[in-house]
Length: 441
Image (cartoon, rainbow, N blue to C red; front, top):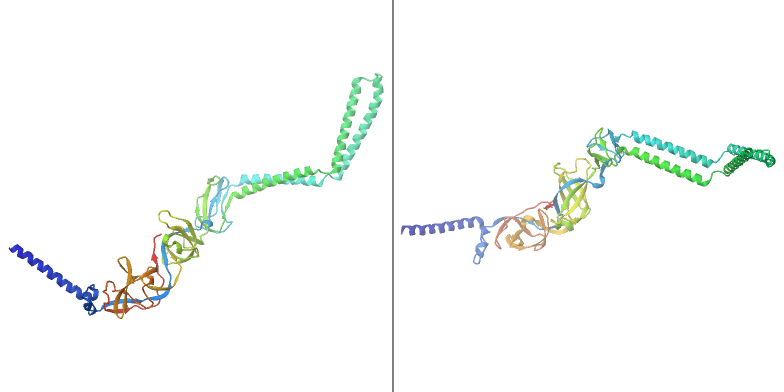
């Protein structure tokens, strides 16, 4: 019996406690109890709720997206230094981080052997030039006259030998001269005739001048000698590595006395006057990002500095897992403070939306998946369904459900029953600055 009475008393106490709490909450909340059938008059006479509201305005909405990226050197402005010939490093003229101009010397290899080969090639060119010049000039008059005298002398000797052989022929027929002696005289005649023919042929060649094929052959030899000299010049030049651009020494691995083989990488140069900020554009925003879009870049290592740039390259292939597309924004590095490899925050400005009906994002509430706002008319709250357009972090476009000039609650209006009286404080001020929505990338 005692146990039953105790339980009944406990249940009565709980009911009284719940009723007391309901009365207290109702007194504190004013109109924040949902109106039900039969309580309309009570809601209308309830204590007015303080609400902060803004006026829906038509203005140009400037959306943007915030992305995480990394700074990189422009690929076309990066030069990899490689040795084209083998050699030992004789001098190193720069250090890492040093600014260089185009054609400045970076390092020099030992080129003594190359210089010797070039001197030899130059001598062969001079020799070929002399031969060609002599052939083009042709024989001198003194040479022609000397050849003519030689031919005449040989002709005289030949005639004398013929007379001598005629005289000895009769003696030989009478057997007054030995056969051996007669044959020796005949051999001397043949030698004299051959010499005369040779001198005559040489005279004709000198009088005719140099043959065209001889000149052509000499010209070909000169061209080959000049090609060898050019190759020797190039080899000497390749022993001296110079900067191909204006920029800075990013990396330098060559050291004094080091032996280097052909195609060995010895350093990296880069023009850092312009850098790329590489980011991933989310697929949802891809249609709104185009080449030329403005960007604001903030390097994490340089807080407080904003660098202006533009999107200059968009990838042609999306990431297979995320659907994101790689983009590169170029920005001027006028102060030289930016470095490749630094992480950065990139704000990409999307196309502006003119004549947009705009309210703060804080005014939007969700009712079972439907976007709603609380509109204050005649100091009473009215929940209204809206259709949203472009949204930034702080502001959102309303395409349906509101009109310019409507008072929209941004604080204290959520969950108010229909027609709940309000004490409205209207937030005023100049047009808010463009704001952003955060996106991964």
